[in-house]
Length: 330
Image (cartoon, rainbow, N blue to C red; front, side, top):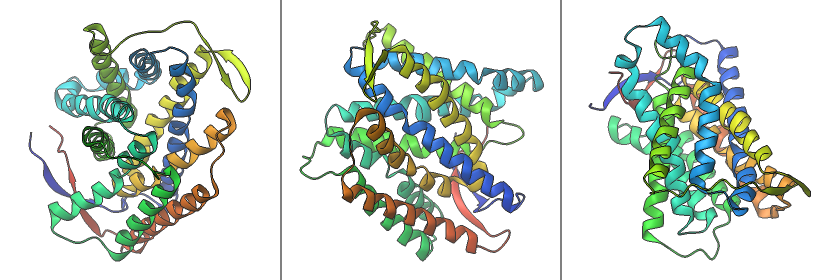
């Protein structure tokens, strides 16, 4: 399969302003849902659950909740898997399994903040990819917005005193590429490939892959009966895992893949940076990890960067397109 450059609208001209606003709301709620995963999973992993077990349960529950959309798509089109199978497989191996496995592997070799910073460079990588493929420089608003957002991200994750680890850096960059793949593949959804069918198929592919790694011993599998402390209250370990699976992951992927075609991969990826801000809030509320004042400044800069990138889209004339690299449908 080759990668081609297709002219895709910065803002889909077939959508009304209301439709684009709906897409932005979906993207923000998706980031909010995803952001709860880390603070809720952290105490579970510290209590004895292995990463492999947590990922298997998380992806399996979410994939099954969204499965009716995939079943409907399979019934509607006889050759659905033959036509869209490669995209669904790619989404599951990169946007679902790859992103999490690479990130958590990087996290074991470097501070979480540094791994987060590198992973969340995905929006900038998408801008750079479009620049290389089209040989057309991004607008001044996009460049300024990217720079402002990256500075804000550095302040939010607080990487002071971190040491360099080459393998950890490469793993985190791989996670960033998988995040970029999430937005590029999600942009291909539409009538022939429903967004929820892609999300379900990707999650079920991801759980099959991670389950295989656990089965052959590459990833440990441990799921003891434990209790964890959230917001000062001791609760059974299954409660935060159920939230992460049924709410955080399900809403995160479902609304995320629905939002990308409405606002475009570039804007959606920058809006996705708000996930790190929401994660700080969840950690503050449930783990008593109080953010430093400089992190609030960083959050404001991230939001400013997102606004600048969004303004570039608003300033484009109706029907104006930006050449964005995409993986073509089979």
